[in-house]
Length: 109
Length: 113
Image (tube, rainbow over all chains, first blue to last red; front, side):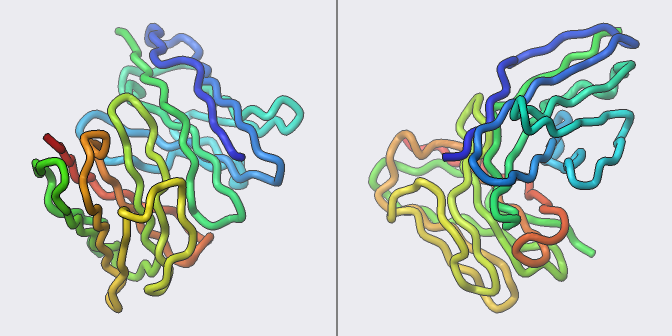
């Protein structure tokens, strides 16, 4: 069965510090991995997906199939990055997502 | 182009009652997925509708049912409400079953007392 684990409920960093939000998954097939973000009082929105290999708002994530991980990284955190971040797994390319429990990122001034 | 809208935004029901939640998909989208998000948890997949037919279901009992209309809007029905059904219910629309980005609504907060 598919499962997504985000081990940190809360991550606090200072502005300008590097950020890494961890995500591990279990799935026997070929997964598609995503990061979704929810800013305060806003709806859930896509941040990035592994197949696009883009950098969005300075964030990147690399799929490591050996370690079954898809960690989200940013070299220099900004206060506006403070939000709830969810890692999600899609199977069979059907936009049916299995979400982790989320990590709240707090970037302090 | 309008985004995904859900109604109502909040409601309170009594245990044993039935509830219907509604979702209008984004213009041009023909796929709607429903999720349940309990407090402190990530969204959990309930089911998906593609062109008016169910296209996959998560680990939810049959008292969770759905419908998609010809205009691709959708309903989520929950019968015999239990206290544990209290959660935020999210719908997401997308174009096609696997192409394109999924856009989420703002959610309906259901409280069962």
